[in-house]
Image (tube, rainbow, N blue to C red; front, top):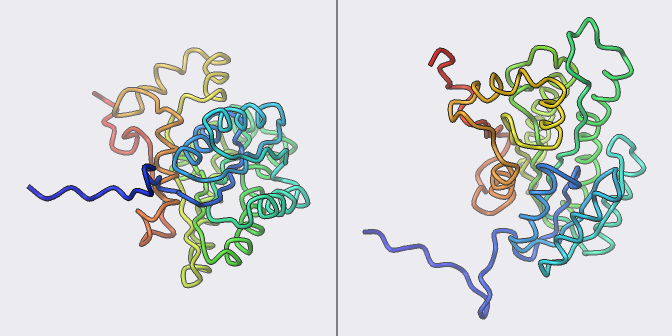
Length: 270
C-alpha cells in the first residue's frame, strides 16, 4: 500500500488549499457564489465578497467572519466597468494582492422561445453574464500579474456547451463565457495566469427554486436529465472552483470542467 501524502502543517494549523491567498468571488450573495466564498475562506483565503445586492453580500461576509476568517464586502454590478475596477482596487488596497477569482455573477432572461425574447432582456442578460466576465478579467488579470500570477475560474453552464431550448440569451452568454475563458487562457498561459471554467448542471440555487415555483411541471423532467437523478448542491460546484484555483491543478488552463451529475452521458430512456 502506498504511503499517504503528508498534510502540510504550520504549527498546529492544517494548511488549506488556498492558504495565504486573496480571492474575489462575484455573485457571492447567494447560491454557488456564496458557497464558493465560504469555501475560499475555509481553505485559507481572504475573500472579497462581491454582489450587486449589498444586503446579501453582507450576509455572506458575516458568515465568513463568524467562522474566524477575513472578508471584504463589496457592492458592485459587474456590468458596470467603473464598479468592477473599484472592486479590484478595493480588494488590493485591503489585502495587498490578488491571487484567485471566481467570476460567478450572472442573470437569466426568463424562460421563453427566442422569438418571444425582447431585446431589453437579451441585452441585460449578456451585459451581466458575458460582458461582466470580460470586465472582471480585464481588471483581475493585471492585479494578478502584479502579484506574481494567479488563477481565474469563470462559471459557465451546460447550457453554454449544449444550448438549451427557451434559454437563448442565457445559453448564448454562457457559450460566450466558455470562448472567453479559452481566449484568456491562451493569452496568459506563459505569464503565470491560469483561466478555466466550471460548467454546472442543475444546481439547487434560489434561481432554480424560483424557476420550479413558476413552472412546477418541469421539476421531475429536469432532475431526470441528470444520470444521478438529483440536482447538485452549490457546495459541489464550489469544490471544483477551489480545486481549479489551487496548486492541485497547476497544469490546467483553458479547460471547461462539467460538474453536471452526468447530464452528458445520461441515457434518457432509462
